[in-house]
Length: 158
Image (cartoon, rainbow, N blue to C red; front, side, top):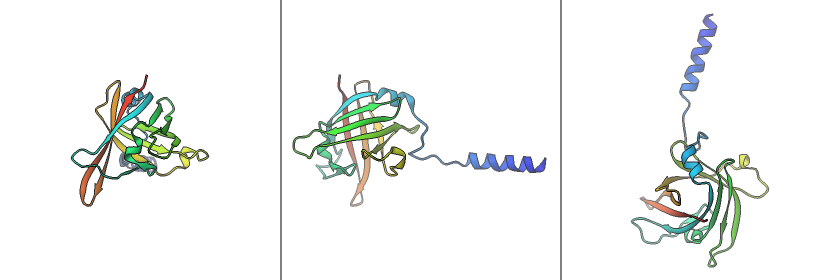
């Protein structure tokens, strides 16, 4: 009987100490379902900053994402992103994504022949100003000791 109580106590301590992180797979369903559909990035801005060169998602300069199209499927957390800016190299990739309980957008850019569970790196962005027809993803970073934000403005495509 003492062993059972001891094991129960240890189990409770282990599960109650579980930390949460940005990649926690618990979902913010409301926010996520509202993102379902086809979107275009209408602008990329840097509040409080002049234009700065940012290599977004290790793919291309952040301004290359203006005009990019994103298909977000909320029931299976998959989708696709395509860069269409004529001034930049073409790029298209499948993605996986979700909105965690903290309201953060968690994104993985996939290679065609690699499954999502094998991709260990991803991106965590804040979701802000979400409406039925628009939302912003905000990437926060640090450049030369200054805190910066890169704001991707998404507009719904009918």
